[in-house]
Amino acid sequence: MPQLSIPEDIPVGYKGQIAESGAPRYARSASADFSSGALEAGDPVIRGTVPEKDAAPVVAASDITAESFFGFVILETSRPQADTPIVDDDPVAVLQEGHIYLDASEVVTAGEDVAVVKSSGALVGLGAEENAPTGTARLPGCRWEETIGAAGLAIASVRMKGSAGSRFMLSAEFAASGVAGTDIAENVIGAVPEDCKLIGAKYIPAAAITAGTGATAMNLQINKRTNALPATQVAVADGSNVAAESQDWNDDGVLAAFEAGDFEMVGGGVEDLLAGDVLTFELTAGASATYPAGMIVLELRTYA
Image (cartoon, helix red, strand yellow):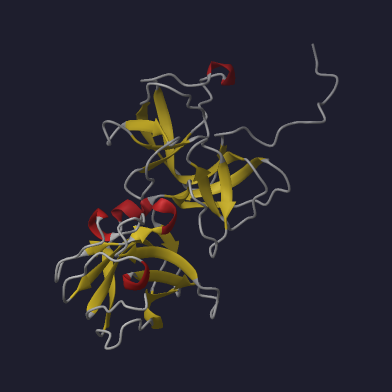
C-alpha cells in the first residue's frame, strides 16, 4: 500500500546514531562490561576490566581521564532500539573519532566541551573558561557541534587521538620566600604551541614541605588563559600542604626535598587546550607560612 501521508515530526536523528556520515570516523569493537545499571547507544563509556576491549558505563566513575575514557556507544542498525539497554558482555561499537548524535540533558552551545555528570551519566556542556562543577567531568576530545535551546539531541564531535600523540613538558621555577606570608602573583609558565591536553602537573620543592593549616597553609594553583587574551583566568589544577583538602600532596600535605607532588586536576580529568592558550601559576601563603624554592612541571600531550 502506498504511503499517503508524511509525519510532521520526523526525527533528525537518534541517540548514538552517526552524524555527518561522509566525515572521517574511527570506531572500536568492544564488549559491554558492567554488573548493574544500564548502557545504551549514545552513552559515554570508560575502559573496563580488560582495558583493551571492555567498555563500562561512566556512572559513578571515580575519575575520567584521557587514559580511561573509551568513547561513545554507537547505535547499531542491526539492533532494534527496543533491544536496549545493552546487557553485560554484549558486543558494542565505540566511536573514538567522528560525529555522533548525543542526548544533551540541558541547553548546549556549539563549541562547548561535552561533559558528564558522573552520578547520573547526564551529558552537559562546559565553556572553555568554565570550571567543571563537583561530580562533573569533561570528556577528553569531545565538543558539541550544534546549539540547542532545550534538552534533546545534538551533534557532538569526538577526537580521541590524543592517546597516540607525543608528550612534552612546560616548566617554571620560583624562588624561596624570604618573608612569611609572601604570595606569588600570577606568573606565566608558557603558551602551548598546538592543540593538546594537559594530562598532569607536578610540584618539586628544593626543601621539605611540612603539613600546614590556617596560618601555615600554602596553595599552588595552575591556571589557563585562553588564546583570546587577556581572557579570564581559569583554575585547572591545585596543590596544597593542607592534609584535610582533596588536593593535598601525598594525602598528608607533606613533600620531601626534591620529591615530585601531583596536583589535583580541577574537574577530575584532563584539560583540553588550544594552540596559543597560556598556562600560569600563582601561590598563596598563610600569614606564618614560608616556602622553599621550587619548580612546577606540566605534562602535555598532543593529538595524533
